[in-house]
Image (cartoon, rainbow, N blue to C red; front, side, top):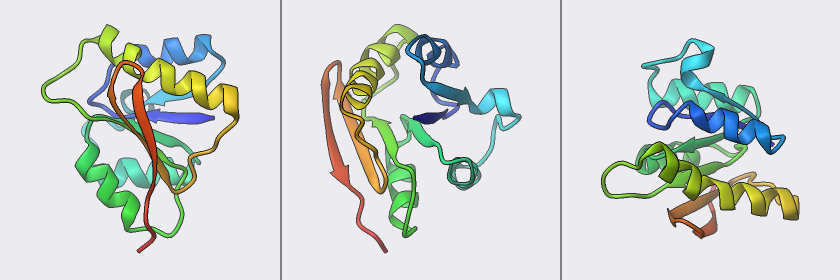
Length: 125
């Protein structure tokens, strides 16, 4: 599993993920702060990375415009999340993916709270 953390989430997620043996980078660490969503999406695709973001609408739209993509983890929240809350929402998803070996090709995990998430298929264009 290889993740790209969008700029709207804390870079600290990278450390938490590394502790679980999950490869991850934050857009700020790869010289892409302020990059447009399509640029982030393209980078993730080229590097076979799942995108983890709070920007659900834009990235779900981008996923629907391509035949194939590595997948998404979207945190759906009204308002922001603290760093601790971000990890509390992401960690159960990562634990399940690690335990099951499930891939998210052409799928999104939609997270609505700590331990509350569903996996949905993204329709092809």
